[in-house]
Each structure stands twice: as structure tokens, then as C-alpha cells.
Image (cartoon, rainbow, N blue to C red; front, side):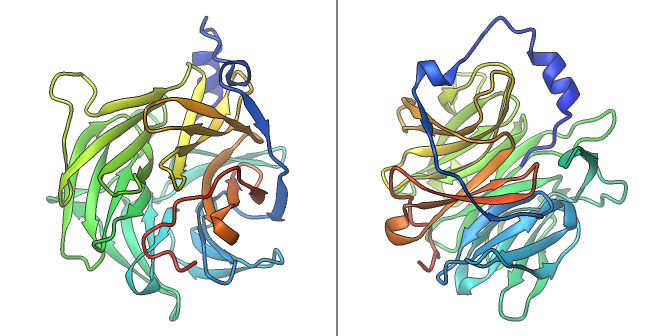
Length: 338
């Protein structure tokens, strides 16, 4: 999830002469959206467990919750700040990117994030034990520098995880963000790419050799070949730090993403002045497979069910967790128990 000011977003982009109608350019597919749960406080970071339940973050409530298959949801832990993205790691623990919290704007049943919260005290990475339901801060600095607003994460098969820090925003300031790598046992955290403009979603290729990052405001998905533990091959000749995979038209905001089994990326298009919101499927070579059309405010996706063909999607603005049958199998994540 990325902070934004909806009014400035619309004013700054609607005058663009570029009209990127995904529905005509790449093909539009409609999904049968089923509401699994509602009344959530800006849900994000869904994780599907073996019993079919979904653990997710409620950013505006500062808590991690569990949604059961019958739609019943309960609080797992009140961890404060702004739990944003989460993933299952070693020993079945949940690792959480905590952005430190936002100032929230509520209007007509819609919840929108603004600047950093009045009590913002920095971002951090949390480890949550599902058995004891106790959380602890694992990292809050890297090389002596404070984390700003960790956003999303993905685990490799070595007990480490890549995560994005989007950068917190104040009334008259905006932190740069970056791509980082950390070990789940608290022994290592490393800066891989810095600075970046609002990095958000992060995903790994099926072979674990490439890490992908979605930039919210630049509307760009980039690829970084992994050359070592927390080390990537940066683009030496371009002003972009990584290899551009795909870009979107002005007036679009990208959010989090996951990969399908064949490496196709599913990137959340949270807002668009063109009306094209939902999940964009992008092949690793940059070819766009089409938009799965969805409501405004979709921020993330997770795969579960038989053959990982059931997609669970957070529709954050109205506080819903949605479900639909996906056209392809999702990538089984490292440490995922289903």
C-alpha cells in the first residue's frame, strides 16, 4: 500500500494527453468477485494459511487479523504503527513490514491514507509468533539509518527476505525509499538499492534469481538479477537502477504484487484516472497479458486453494477482502504451508 493524496493525484494527472486504456490495449477480463469479509480497516498484505484462512494487516487499526473461510475475522495481535505487508517465514512466524502509521481521511464510507501519523516514530520490521500471538521488532535501522516506511516483503528459500521501504511522507517532505534484504533471525540487514521513488510491491521469480519491484508514482515495474545475499546487479548505463519490465500510463498508481507459477507478475493497479483498476498481469519479458478488472482501491493479492487457483485480494479503501478464481496457478511462496 502506498500513501497518496487523492486530490493532488487527480489534479496532477488528469490533464495528461496520454490515454492508456488497458481495456482496449491489452484486453480486459472480468472476475466474479466474492466478498469474503468486510468492515476491515484498510486491509493489506494477505497471507493464505493451510486451513484456508487469511492473515492480513489492518493498517489503519495497527493490527494483524485473521479472516476465516466463513468470513469471521478476529484480531491476532495489536502491534501498533502501520502494519502494511506480511509474509510467512521460518517456523511459521509472520513477518510484518510496519510503515509507522498514517494520518487517515474518512469520507462517504471510504478510508484514505494521508501523511505520516502524528505519533509516527519510524518504520520497522516485526516478527509475529502465531502461537503466542506476540510480536517483536526485528529491525528498525539499516547501517545505522532509520527505516522510514517498510511496505512489502517476499521470502527466498534461504531464510531471508527482500523488502521495500516506500519512504514516509510529511506535510512538506517525502523520504526516498529503497530495496532491502534481511535475515529472518535478526542477524543481517542490507541496503540493496537506494534511492528509489516510492517502491511498493516486491516479488521473486520462480527460480529465485530475480527480484521485481513496482514503483507507485513512476508507474514502473523493474527487475534486478540477484548476485549474492542481499546483492543485486544494478543497471550501470541507465538512469534507472534496474531493468524496466513494464510501465503504465500517467494517471495510474501501482501497489503490491505477487507472481504466478510461470513467473507472470500480478500487479495491483489501485487507482487510475482512466478507470482501469484491478490486477495487471505482466510476463517477465514485459508483455502485458491483460487486466483483471476490479474495483478501485485494490492493493494486493495472495493465492490459495486447490492448485493455488483461488485469489484473495484486498480492496483497501472500502475495507473488504475479496475472492475469485484465477486464470492461472499462483507461485507457491517459500514457507507457504499449502
